[in-house]
Length: 116
Length: 115
Image (cartoon, rainbow over all chains, first blue to last red; front, side, top):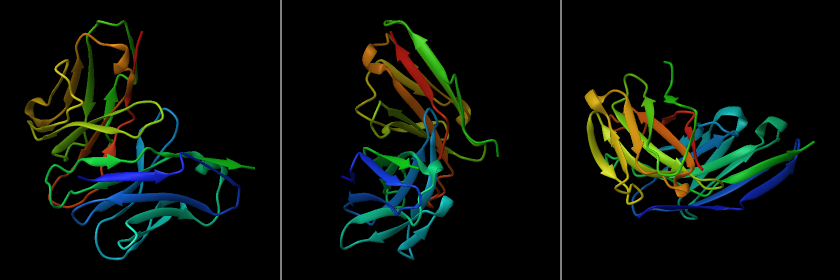
């Protein structure tokens, strides 16, 4: 079975500071990993995804994440936070390539606050 | 590409009533998924379709829930005899499902409030 753990339900940073949102996963097969962002009362927007190949993945809005198999981690970072980054962030894992079902297993989410 | 469309955006219903939500996926996507998201939680998988076939259902999908995808196009999710615990955001997503890990496209969701 697959699972995702997001460390820290709330993270607060100052504008311009480094953003680090932590995600650890459990999977019995090579995982596909995703980060999504959700603004209030809206659906989920894909930030970035790791499937195969390069372990450092760049996404939209200046975010990136690094897949570390040895640490079973997929932490999300952004060098400099902007006020517009304030939102809920979800890490998700899927076994798309092995299981044609392709459902996503989500973490509990991390709410990011950005202080001026 | 008009994205995934969900209707209605908000639904308030009295306990015991039936409700139905609709999802229109991206036209070329053959896979369609339903998720439920309660306040402060991540989305939880409910069910998915490949074309018109419902291939997997979560244990979360009680007998009061039913989903259909006639002709492999839009999908409906019906909840019968609603309970207060059904209050949540119901999210629909679609993907191409061609054996490649395309990212999902999510709709904006239907927020259900049972009073």
